[in-house]
Image 1 (cartoon, rainbow, N blue to C red):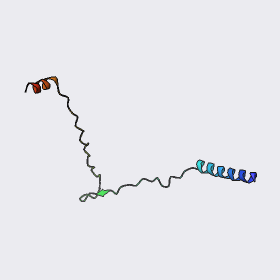
Image 2 (cartoon, rainbow, N blue to C red; image 1 turned 60 degrees about the vertical axis):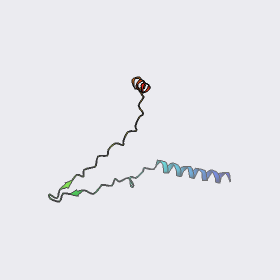
Image 3 (cartoon, rainbow, N blue to C red; image 1 turned 30 degrees about the horizontal axis):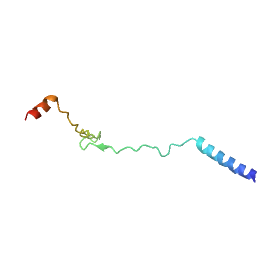
Image 4 (cartoon, rainbow, N blue to C red; image 1 turned 60 degrees about the horizontal axis):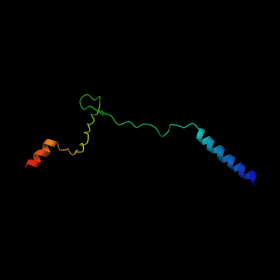
Length: 76
C-alpha cells in the first residue's frame, strides 16, 4: 500500500516537473497587425493619423485668502 502511494506521488511530481521545465511554444502570442489603408490617388500605403487625446481637466483647488483680502472683507 505504501509502495502504491509512493509510486503515485512520484509520478505526479515527475509530471509536474516535466510540465514546468517544458519549453513553451509561442503559439498564442502572435501580434495582430492592423490593416493598412491605401491612398485613393497614389495607391500607396498611408499612415493613419491618431487623434491626440487631451489630458483630463485638473481638479480645482480651493484658494486660501490672503490677509489683505480678509481685512477688506472685515471693513465692509
